Length: 92
Figure 1 (cartoon, rainbow, N blue to C red):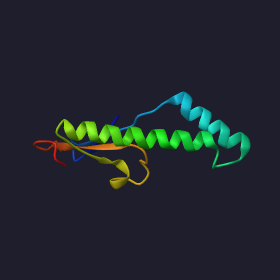
Figure 2: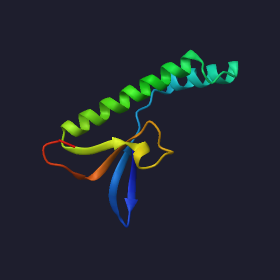
Figure 3: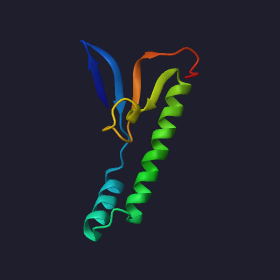
Figure 4: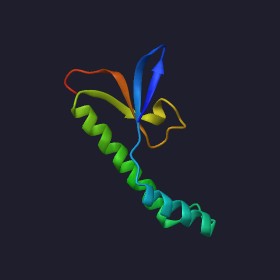
């Protein structure tokens, strides 16, 4: 997790789910084969996307405003951004 500190107070929080062994296997496959379309990389990317989607859904059900972090910062691909303000009823 990483706090997005704007003006001295938390504006939001970046959350990243990771599976180091899965990521390492994917990167190794891409590097060794010089193939950015390696099946291991595709598998890893799909898992990250599913986890991001699940985290957002769970956080929203808990009443937080959560979005794909790419909507806030295009470098934060795969992360989840939770705004510092909660919403009522989790409808967001």
